[in-house]
Amino acid sequence: MCGIFGVFNQRQNAPQPSFLDCMRNALRHRGPDASGEFIDDIGAIGNTRLSIVDLEERSNQPLISEDKQTVVVANCEIYNYLEIRSELISYGISFETNGDVEVILKSFEYWGPDFVEKLNGMFAIAILSLQEKSLYLFRDRLGVKPLFYSILPNSNQFFFASEIKAINAAMDHKTVSDLAIAEFFANNWIPPQKTIFENILQLPPGCSMRVIANREP
Image (cartoon, rainbow, N blue to C red):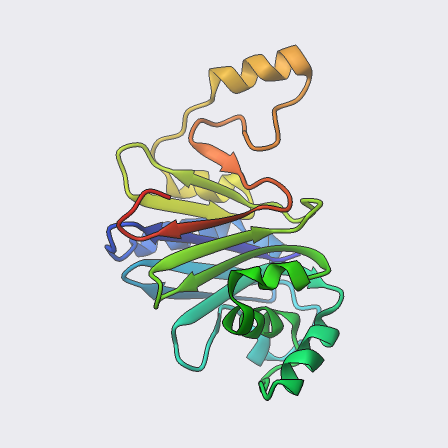
């Protein structure tokens, strides 16, 4: 179990460090072994790591591509990462770590967003593409790994995290959804994409999302 979190600014204003501190602290229990962040004008992404695959510091996240244009954080267990790694090596691609997150990074660089179709496992992945000025989110087909997001009202800030409380920790505006409460009492559950809070949604299992700077997501 790891934690991922981040802020994407659709108007390309650098995120406030306090946001990241609040989100990281809220997720520290998910990854006590290491934590890291990458900050750029279009946004920031971070990770709290529970080291399982490749225990070396070189696999601490975020992982950044050689050209410094792609940044990845993930909460994942990719069962077939060795097979994908071998395929990429056969194409002449080299690796610096033995971890599965670098396989995600190199797969995205080689195949683009469709790389996710190759993954067999459970995952919540965030990829910041500086070249495209975009943030990509991916979630595994069964939704084993959680991934939540929010767009603040009257704001161009897009938050995401492994847990709702990390988003709430960074937001001043927290409102319980009357509609979600009504759906819970009527159906004994809240529909998968919704949460108990207004403006906080869950990325559905098997889905992906792209958020683009200076445009609506």
